[in-house]
Length: 77
Image (cartoon, rainbow, N blue to C red; front, side):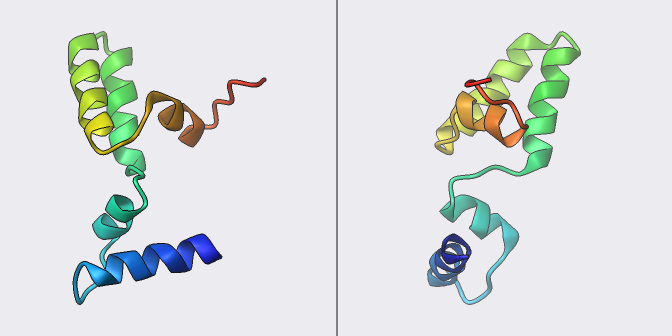
């Protein structure tokens, strides 16, 4: 709950209206659609396109490990 409140406060500082995009930016998370696009590109054999998408996400401070965790993959199991 505290993380959600902090995310909302951080997004509110950036503008008068809190939008989903601002929440994603302030929490350094990515939209599920972006991850799905990355995975689809890789599964379609478009590896360089998938790599470009991964690099775009990494520019937003999203790591490969975080992408896997967001999709339910756990390195420890």
